[in-house]
Structure formats: C-alpha cells, structure tokens
Length: 416
Image (cartoon, rainbow, N blue to C red; front, side, top):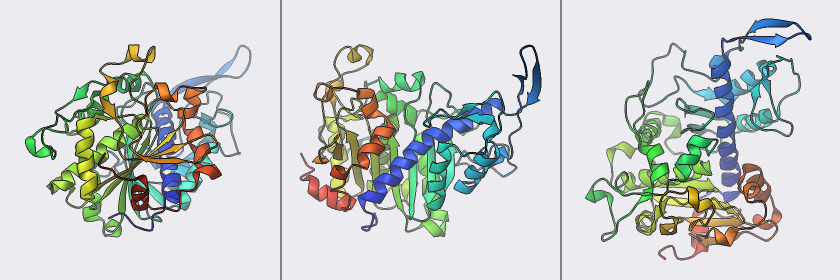
C-alpha cells in the first residue's frame, strides 16, 4: 500500500519534475541519435568551411542500444541510465548543443562552440541526482519530432518509489492522437470479467487507447506497449529485493497525463482480478497527473470508482484554472478538428484546481466544460512552467500536508 508518510508536497513536486524531465530527455536523445557519427560542415569564413565528424563523448551514458549486454524481453534499455551518467554526458558534450535563452529543448549546435557554463536543463538533472533516481527503462524507439509514445520507468531510491512517466504532446502525430475522442469499448474491456459494474458500456479515448494498446514493432516482440511496461514493472518488484516495499506512482503532463490515467486504471483492473501479470505490484497504484485530458465515458468512470472503492486505485489530478485541455464538451472552432463526441466524457479521481491567486480548490472528479475555462492565455495556462508557478503559490499549499488518502477523504464522497 502507499506509504502513509508520503505527503502531497514532495509527491507533487517530484512527479512534476519527472514529467518535465521526460520531455527534455527524449529531445536530447533524439538529437544525439539524429547526428551521431554524421559528417558535417561549419563555416570558418565568408567563403570557407571546414568538415567535421560528430563524435559525442561516451554516448553510451544515455543511449544503450549499442551495448553488448543481453537484451531484456521486458525492457528497451539494455542497462540502467543513472542521473550521474546523464550529468556526465551533458557536461562532456555541451559543444554539440544549444539551449534557447530561458531554457527549452536543446538543438544541435552546427558551430560546435565550446561552452563552460552549464545549461539550465542540467540543474534539473542535478535535482534528480540528489534524489538518487535512475531509469530502468526508457522507450522512445518510434518517437520523432512529430511525436509518438515515449515513457520512462524510474526508481527513486531516496523516496522509495517506482515511477512510470509518460511524455506529453510534442508534434502533429500526438495532436492527431489527442483529437480522436471516439470511444473504444473493447481494448480495456475484452471480456465480461473485465467489467465489474453490470449494465454499462464503458469506453475509453480512442487515440490514447491506441497509443497504449497497439502492438510494438521493430526490435520488440509484438506485445502491446502497455503489457511491456507492466511486465517491466512487475519484474522489477519481483526480482529486485531493494524495491519490494516501494510504492508505485504513474504520472505525466497533458497527453502524458491521459496515458498515465489509463495505464493506472489497467494495472488496478488487473490487480483487482488477481491477474498473474501484476502479481508483484503493490496493492495500491497511484496516478498523479498534470493537465490530463478526459479519457473515458460515464460508464468507464463507474469502473474507475469500483477500483477506488476497492482500494487498489488512487488518482490525484492537478489542473490549472483556464487550462482548456482537461475539459469536455469542446466547442467551436476547436471542435471542428475533433473526432467523436466530447460531451460523453467525464474526469476521474480527486482534482486539485490551481488558481492564479486564490487558494486551491479540492473536489472529486470536478469535470469542467471547455466554455467554463475560456479566458486569457489558455496555452500558457497549460504549459509545464505555469504548473510549476502555481504549485509554488502560497495559496495553493494548504493541502500539501495531507497524504493521498487524507485528500480522498477531504474531497468527499467518491461514489457520485
């Protein structure tokens, strides 16, 4: 069960950092893989240029696929990636990267300029080092600049938890996934024993469900991505004696929050069925999501509530006032790009609604329509920096002394 000493303050701060870092780390790896061993030219004058070869120092610190280690059927990485290794790679390879002023995604530096000052992203890595965090898996095999499913499985040895983190939207591929609100009634409910509440027809967001339930191609074995992640986590709890009493958290921002919500539901659903695939997982799985969109209909929420009542599932959903992404009943012109009926959807779990200045509002589900959240700066209100900002506001700290269980009690009846 979740550690009763896990206060929301450190849980929310840690998981928001992990959600943010997965965005950045995926981008660094993409730049490295796109340019490694390439021959390029840089200008040395008005009419002159110089050939050079891109040779990163010890790329194996963050890219494991060329390693000689035997592959693990449940993991994409061939070996763990530690925060120390990431820090070392960044320090030794600054000349190959540029960082936008004020922070942001690294890009390849065609000028190959030596740099002594650390990038802002390195400060995030330093925080991760202080918490003794390492990746036991990180899969971005099919990700491009346009998007694609990216997730990491991390162990935090200091705070004694395993965390599954899903990346949010980065490009057009993800946007096409985000807008597919058709209901999938089969992927999470393949048989009658997958449905605990009789008389309903639970359905999940087609786009997010497809990301999680499509069979993986390429080097992998054809299993659903969701099944591979569950197998990785279950095996870690089974075989690693150091983590047997650890908690399991799932997190993500935006699209990543939607995927985290669905993944947590599936893990809890299997746990409630005493399924062998989750035998070694903790009895309770907790999602903490940021800016998460709706993922299912009212009958899906009834299944969700069954698992909450059973005590195997918890979800703390953090959202910002004025963020349009976590809403339903999407209106024109945004609705013109949507597939499906967004009015059929509802949110799940306990909601922490952060405001610009007023204190946080706690409620169960607390589903908002798009019209109710219209205002200035909807994009700014959705982005990770604004979530950092509001998490730090004094008015939003009143709930931080509570545990997840205490917050569920404070939110009121979760059978409505």
